[in-house]
Image (tube, rainbow, N blue to C red):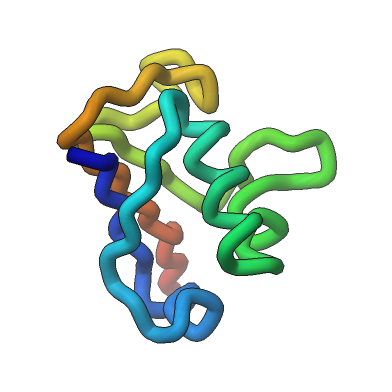
Length: 91
């Protein structure tokens, strides 16, 4: 069973309107790389110039923030779920 990636609405135009995409990656960074190879342009929306996850993008593996795990080196197993959540600012 592959890893499930939940794509937020603002990024679905890059994934042919797919809400859920399956990847075969073993790390979060590998999942981002696989998404980029299938959907060019998505990586630049998720990562900054240094390659880290953008400050206003939250990435969760099974509901745990990767910033409190091993960031992009966080290991993935079959059946895991990655959620990409863009931060929402209000005023």
